[in-house]
Image (tube, helix red, strand yellow):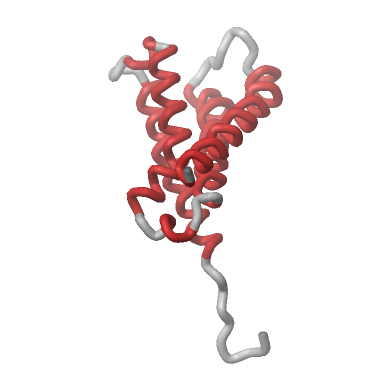
Length: 137
């Protein structure tokens, strides 16, 4: 049940953050023509997607309860399943992205892997308590 809660939180955060990205960034700045260059695609599509994946991974990891958080494989499954499932859904709905020679597949996979790694790292760093030594508390 703990995994399902993590996945649900990850999906909700991913859907809400992607919706915000689509309405505030992609819609007004890109429009129906799409992006014209690699730099524009990076700035207006891939970096905002990276933020969405980081937020979803981090939120899912934060709600994963204690006894299972210390099991690395289970914690990664709890944290990264929603963004990974979204990637698989994207590839199923847009088969044109599956071209290994095209940059879309590699960029979206890089965004997924980087976003999951940063989200898990943020969870680990946020879960540690800072202890000061040698001074007043």
